[in-house]
Image (cartoon, helix red, strand yellow):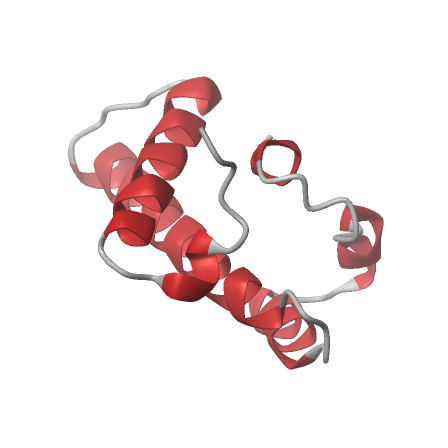
Length: 96
């Protein structure tokens, strides 16, 4: 959903299936020499943070939000990070 929202057509999700761990996924994406490497690093940190917070809410508060709500939180956080000066992330944000 985030990939489509940010029009990241060059990001190939099917390549991630062969990876064995989150560390491998992170390393593969963070070391690719592409023009979108820096924005993707910011995006990966942001998404990881939001998933971690959702994980904690499920484990410690026994609350669950639908995927659509989590995606909306990620989109909102992307906008806030961009507004706060995350210049690389701002470069891939849709213009409204």
